[in-house]
Length: 376
Ligand SMILES: [Zn+2]
Image 1 (cartoon, rainbow, N blue to C red):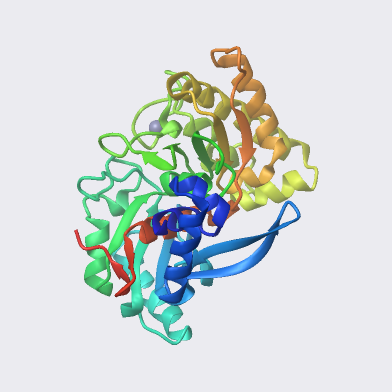
Image 2 (image 1 turned 135 degrees about the horizontal axis):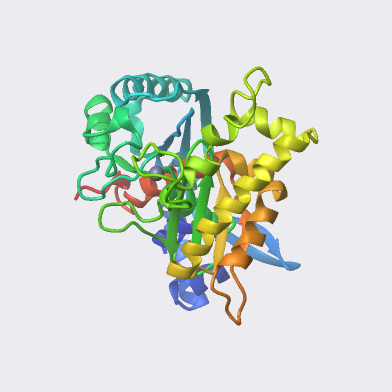
């Protein structure tokens, strides 16, 4: 039951019975016991006009941190066991950031944030961390060369644990964004989903039954490196004509003459929102290209739902309508139709929420000891 609450946050007693397979009477008894011992917290709510007891983990069970290093931003949030965020912080990152300098900076920021909450880093039960590259689940290192040069060959979790003395769990940003959307966001009700993250880079996370499918090297879902044109431009992964060379931020921004003020994706997004025709056209073309890669994902993986996240997803239908169109044109058609394409629930905080989720997955909640990190 505690596991269900860790996965879904708050649930009513009826939903808890559904997710655990226990009878409503048994759930009610267990909830009473665990509330008395301080593990659970209950409150009254109304669902479809009827009163219901809403159950969550108790807040005082301890804090975890979720961290997201994207290509251009660092986002950090501290959350309690109910996944309520109690402190958050975001700052820009230089392109080609390096692990040593950034993990050092993160150590200071985590310490400041915990200070202002009246605690210290040693109070954190665990830290989840997202990076913009695939991570090998066996070694904890970036598993593809050329995608995140300043972080290659480093055991990221171990390196941060050495600095803060707390357990750290690392995965790719697409995987963790996908996990957040599947557990508590747009894909909450889907049995399988693909989270396509479109920002400075393009990647995807595959989620089945609320858990990630990582592949043997953690490279599952690297749709940014699906070949669109064998004779196309050279990609940073050293292949040619990858999706990223057509629809990644550097490719989109390079289409504008210097001096037009298109430095970052945010410039392109505000121009599109203001009705600028060329900005809207560039985003629509990116959507068409991404739709072709999404069609390959559908042919291979056949997901129930596609969730689009990352900074470019803020363009909404300007991006997603052409994506849908090219998915319909290129994917193998089926009698049940193609998966729906929807936007992310958590926008730029999805990956941080996924990082909080993997941190909480590694925290054990016991009646006697409260919440403690699970030691393998
Ligand atoms: Zn590539």
